[in-house]
Image (cartoon, rainbow, N blue to C red; front, side, top):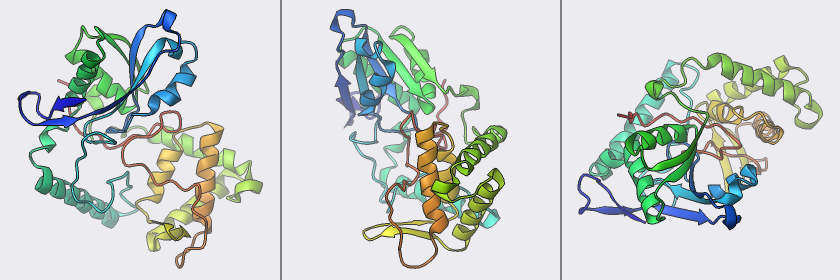
Length: 319
């Protein structure tokens, strides 16, 4: 669909937003349209209906499942800042020098985007995405639209319900963020919970040492990971064979662990254990290990059933 870049100038420049519809199968009891946002911020959601409908069982069959790639993500109008790779989710590293490198990197990304898209950046906001959702509602011919949002999607859903209080039906906010705390310091105060998730995953992995070879106890597994991070700090770990080669340094390994430990289901834990096993075996030098199963932390958003991925927010307040 076509929407204004600037809703304050609806007759001006336009962009496209990609949407999808998986029609209700229980047409006799159809309720309406349900738009789903996977989080991110900025996570593409075009195919999310295929994942969410089976989870919702008989309720999902009563909705048209609507996916959307938020403006400037996925198949929507792109925003190209001339970067060699996506921004991704990165750790600040183990020391002050690593922190300063990430500050410089973030500043470089911002400067490049400002140099190439200064006129567009002011319109990449949560509230404009909420306005796009309301256009979706209108395009579908719905008087009210239902909404399901995960993680950042709960913030977006909050914005939509405040901005369009008469145009929503049923709303579910899963893993809801406190709008008053939504800032670059959002994760402050969650250290205890994250350490508990780390211990739980280490216990799970230790019980399967014959498979993953990361240690037979929680302490041994954690020591293995400490060694992996230390090795990545000295020299990037090389995994894979050409053309699929990955180089992971001290800014990427902790981020991979952070996202992977956010899901306590067995498949997610196994996926992370497989990745860590590859990293534990990797050493600087020519690639020598298969890269199958190794996933770099996604730039924006992830599958809601696999991770509760929490990116640095876009600092767009709900007002």
